[in-house]
Image (cartoon, rainbow, N blue to C red; front, side, top):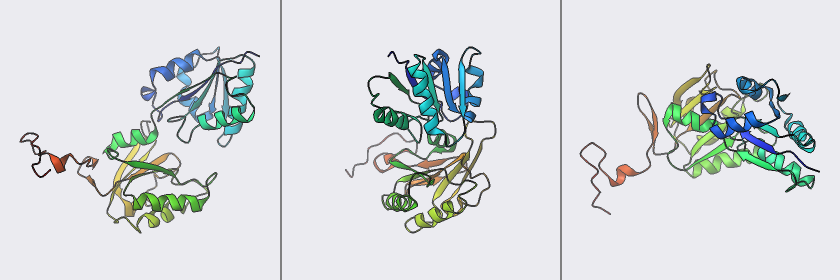
Length: 264
């Protein structure tokens, strides 16, 4: 059997200006485009009338992958689109797992095209909060037990990571963000800078720089939001949230020239 190529494409945070040329070309070259209906709507202006479009609902991830495999078995080049980067809470892992379970690894041609993750877009909008080590934790317990999420939150706080929170709140999960905040407050001071971003790069984008103590007090927090909580070297001024990387410990950054610290 001659399988058609499946290209798993990260479409970025939402605005088409943040879509890579590789992703753009891959979408346009595909005979079939499959994805969550909202993602297909975001890229609708790129799609041609001759392309087959297969939109799916949220939580239909397995169905999307199975549809991609089916279209591939028909010899059709298929784009499986995923918001942000397809490998970060995206479709690439599930597709590869399904191919492996069906003994199709190496038989179905697969290419994975990276995309700009939402947290990178949030960080850029806020300033420079992830200039050093960071971690990403989703508060969705749909597939991950909540006790594991709590363990990861405590480990991240103890390790002084910049902490990025995905899926902070949904219609069904109203209290988990407050629980997570209280876990972080066990190790982190309440006035630690934090940024909340909703629909980053899209027309309804909202960005708020606040503190850890207040991350659960804004209406913009939803499944379309991401939160970045700084580490002990993060501060906020009137415009930006900035995490110091350590240059100030070695160099004079006051405008008098980069003078190496003589205490080394």
